[in-house]
Amino acid sequence: MTQLDKQADTHTAMLAFGQRARAAARLMRNAAGHAKARALLAMADLLEERGASLKRENALDLEAARRNGLAEAMVDRLALTDKTLSGMAQGLRQIAAMPDPVGSTGPTTIRPNGMRVAQMRVPLGVIGIIYESRPNVTIDAAALCLKSGNATILRGGSEAFHSNQALGAIIQEGLKAAGLPEHAVQVVDTTDRAAVGEMVTMTEYIDVIVPRGGKGLIERLSREAKVPLIKHLDGNCHVYLDKAADPAKAHDITVNAKTYRYGICGTMETLLVHADVAATLLPPIAATLVSKGVELRGCERTRTILPTALPATEEDWGTEYLEPILAIRIVDSIDEAMEHIETYSSQHTESIITEDLGAATRFQREVDSSSVYVNLPTCFADGFEYGLGAEIGISTNRLHARGPVGLEGLTTMKWVLTGEGQLRG
Image 1 (cartoon, helix red, strand yellow):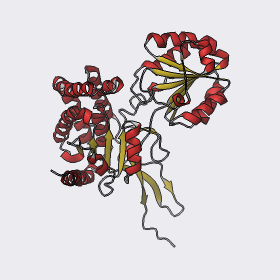
Image 2 (cartoon, rainbow, N blue to C red; image 1 turned 90 degrees about the horizontal axis):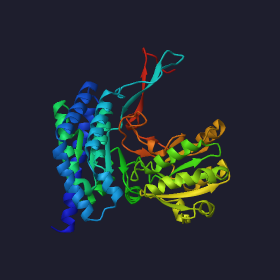
Image 3 (spheres, rainbow, N blue to C red; image 1 turned 90 degrees about the vertical axis):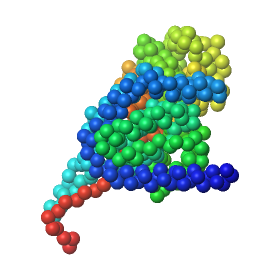
Image 4 (cartoon, one colour; image 1 turned 180 degrees about the horizontal axis):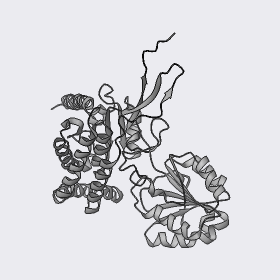
C-alpha cells in the first residue's frame, strides 16, 4: 500500500467515525437521564468484574512502553492498577449520581410585555478527545460526554492501544445495556498519527476537540486544528510560601504538592519563598524532598541556604518537569512572587501558603491562573477533588471553559423564550 493509499484509508475511516458520531449526537440530545446513569453504572460493574483481563491488556502496553524507553512518569500514567480501576469505577458511579445538566434552565426574566426569557443547558454535540498515555481518560471522557448528552470520538495514544481497546469494549457493553446508541462513544482503532490530523479538521462532524497530552501534541493541534480546542499547553504550577506562612503547613503542603505524583499537570514545579522566612522554612522542606529523591535547583539566594542545590537557570523557571525536580526561588515580597508567576506560569494552578487574610485575598484576586488556592497543594487540580466527578481535562482557555472541565463545561446554553401571542410592535 502506498502512502497515498494509506492516507485515503485513514480519511475514509475517520469520516465514518464522524458520520456515526453526528447521528448518535442527535439521539443523545434527548437521552433520558436514567438511561445515561444506567449505562455508567453498568460500565462501573464491568470494570470491577474484568479487572484481571484489563490488567493483562495493560501489561502489553507497559511492556512496550519500557522497551521503547518511555519516561518513568509516563509509564506511571499508563499503568492500570487495582487502585486505578477502583477509582475509575468510583468516578463512574459518582457521575451517574450527579444531576443531569441537560435541559436545566437558569433564572427566568419576564419582559414588560409578559414574554418569559431564560437559558437552557444543552450538549455541545460531538466532542473529540485526543490524549496520551493515561487509559483512565478513556473512561473519564466517555462518562462525562455521555452524562452531558454528547457523542464522543476518543483517540488515545499508541502507547495505550491495548488498554484503550479493552476499555472501549466495556463502554460499548454499558451503552448497549442501557439502550443508548452504540456510536455515542467510539474509540479509534488505529495508531496512525494521520487520524489525529483528520479529527482536528472535521468541522462538519466534530464540534470541539479536547486534547490531553504533552506540550508537543498541544502545539501541533493548535497549529493544525480547524475545530475549536479546549486545551492547556502545560502545567507549570507554583507554590508561594508567604512571610506569614505557618511552618507546619508550609512543609506538608510543599512536599505533597511536589511528591503526590510527579506525572500529573497539577504537580508543583517551582517553589517561591519569602526572604523573611526562607532560612527557617527551606531546610526542613529540602531535607524531606531530598529524602524522597527530589533534585533541587535554586537561585543564588536559595543556594546560600541550601548549598547542595544545583544552580537554577532561566529555563528552569518555565519548565514543567513531570519528574522529581523542583526549582526554588527566594523573593522579597508577594508582589515579586506574583510577578514571577505572571512571567513564567502556564496559568494552570498556583497556591499561596499564608495566615494573612489580606495576602490570601490579594493572591486569589490578582493571580491570573485557572485555579488559585490558599493553603492547599496544587495537586488538588483535579475534577474529582472539585466535586465535578472525573474531568475531561483542565482548560487554561478564557473562552468556553476554564479550569477542570466537568459536566457543565461540556454543555452550552441556548435561549428559550415563551409567550402568549405577543407581537413586536
